[in-house]
Image 1: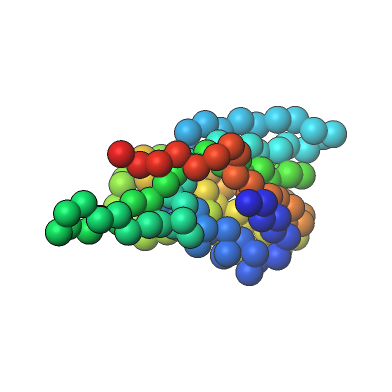
Image 2: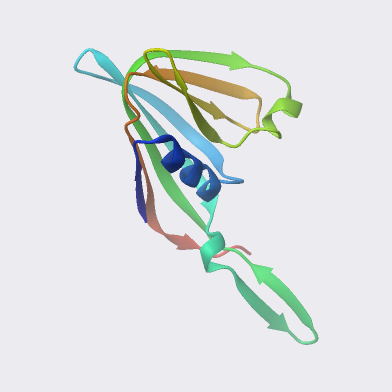
Length: 135
């Protein structure tokens, strides 16, 4: 699955797709006087959930998949640490319009918040590899 985003509603769709995802690694890559942010994620593939029957019991199995979230042409970046309680209230990624462009905020469940600013929203989420079945 590949999901580009360049408007606020696209970011909301990607946030819904990445609900419950885990950030495995983050990289900042310089590119032509700007920054690109690459995040490697692991997300639940909710669209491929299956009900598995074992005798009289039923269980919902959800596969997991690695993914990559890339934001390009960033102007500035700030990293802050906060308590875990705030992470539960925000989606993994969200964006808002600010004077002169956009602010994109990435919040990890581990208590880190990454704020990036850009003149234009320009990013993509894509699955990498095949889904891995949960135990």
